[in-house]
Image 1: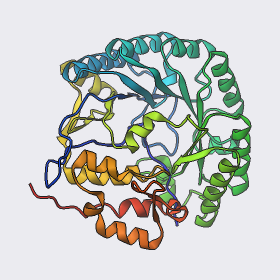
Image 2: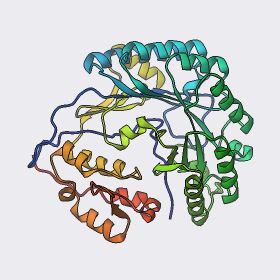
Image 3: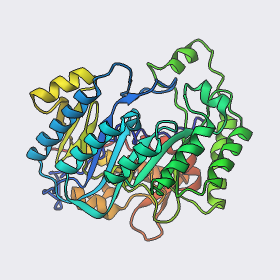
Image 4: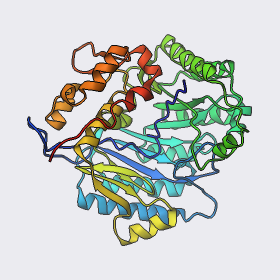
Length: 418
């Protein structure tokens, strides 16, 4: 069994859509307000990690200010097309947004505030960061610009593993960056860890978990390595040069992770995410609840109303595209079938499961009617169970280990008439 817990959410956003089915009996919701969530992509990195297939580019010689001005223009055009109401969450991903200089960061955050001015009093404003790219001055600019949550890509607490996956930071950088964040008044912090890395053992992961928990942070994300095409790791894998843990060790890593997080008082609220009560990532819940969001920046995905879009990926092509209008690579209407399947797949990533009342509200159809065959099979196999409140379904303990199989069961079963 290969465990894949990655989501990609922090870098591109999922196509979590909220769609009027427009077919069949019942009354589906047919009106949409503006999204309450904003995703913004900063595509620059200090270097390209060996496993990374995200839309990112090495910073050296990149036209950073030209990109930030193009992003400002995309924001302006976007809010002209779909004026924002109150914004509940903002997430800045990458790339590594914290490679921006303090001046660039100040310009960028001022743009965000200018175009999306109506922030909820309890807005969650997250920025991804890499240890070693967050000095006190930059963090102070981030705090002053409205950022109140920082997610650090730590990945491991063994320097040998870090260098083996192409990370340029070390464990000293991790502690220094977290200390600086606290000094800047940023206390809602999260770190990412990875398992299933080349040459990683169960004992090494256990040590990383221990060091992570000693930090007593409100949130942790832990992802398994997935070897993606167009990465150095994929090339090595094809040549049988990538010493990955075997499947049994990877399973033990995931079981260990879940056990230790639970013992430490963290709730596993999603396949890969653990939080103290009240510190779940509200922005990512937008995707998992199949709700609308703005998507801005090179390669970003967004969904507004019934339209999904993907932006132009390259930095210079994106800049040129934004100068001419909205920098779209493609834009299309999402079918009711796809939206329903998305609802099932992303909703079941949450350990509390999906709510069938939300499904009926969005689509005017009963979840059980649309997915009768896979639902009955998964319940019989013990991979799904009913929610305790009777409003929907969630993964069983065994289902958590076979999540990809469960999610895939909801694909390709629907055929709706016009």
